[in-house]
Length: 219
Length: 218
Image 1 (cartoon, rainbow over the protein chains, first blue to last red):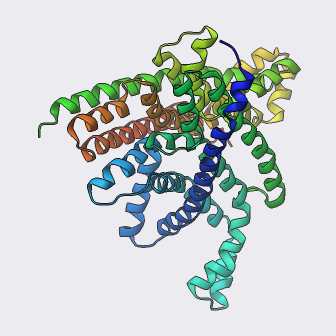
Image 2 (tube, chains in turn cyan, red):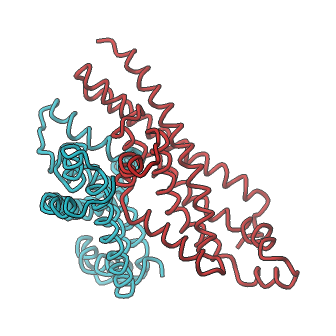
Image 3 (cartoon, each protein chain N blue to C red):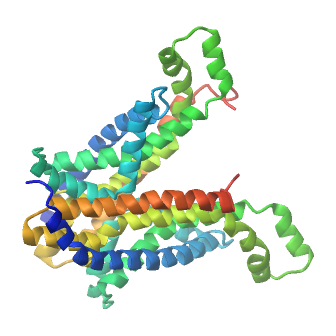
């Protein structure tokens, strides 16, 4: 039972269908994580204890529980209370919200890194709160965060195989169905592993470039 | 509807999850030190081996590694029980992340410490064992705690290779009772309590190891 090249080549088109879903889920999940993470970071800075404490607790809770269980909740529990999501929407929300709790920490560190004088200067020239955020703070805070954010997006990419558990036909699920159908595991599983490894190694170089371009948070 | 039997089932699953977490962490800890120190070796071959291990396990998803260990290794003549495959995949994966923590912490120890070791004529092993590691352990702890929580969360995926851990038992309960909220809410709370226990234990360990060091450490 060793490697069979003709079988390996014959399954590439099916795996490619999965790759497309994997990439789509990663991109959409990254957008959700980027936006929701910023929202969490801003809400946690709220001066109202009724806002910042519950948000902080929920973020901790989502970070301390497995993504797989959260996906099950989105996929199995929500329909019982009348919210039916398509598997892909549930998967993207699950990935995005789970990783938002991580990106929120990146935003927090990045925002804390903006010098106090900038806030004071914004106040001195009479900018409103929203002008201060959009014109002064975020433009300075965001570029140094980019490498750290990208790091989490890569981590999210490596978690997309979990989506197969809620019936999404991404790469891992395609590989599993090929394997179960033909009863050959070695080629599909290995090819999925190689795919993730190649993308990860490429992204390591991408990250180094981003770090050179934008610097790191805290340096 | 009486759920008590199912809650007992979930608690049995919680024991399996705890076992997987503890065994996975033990393997991860060993691998973290072996590979982390391996990356700092003066022998090029050892460094290359450690780097290959770290990049391989950080680069491929833990999910893929688990399925590979469970479905492909038997074809290559290595029969693993699901539990062994789970511990192996989780431990090797998290160990690769831990190795970078070990490397970073060891490298952060000041150059003058190493020079002092040379001046005292300590061997490389003695310097590592008595001077560098005792100082490097403390800064490793918080990240090790985070890694342990990542491992705890990753144990949920072993339910997909038929290990009856907590997530598996919750699925059993869902399939048999049709109730969805009770099983998943229960296991989420238990996972969260486990995560709190890990971070609490790490903080206690940190206090214990830094006792009497106030003002000594920078």
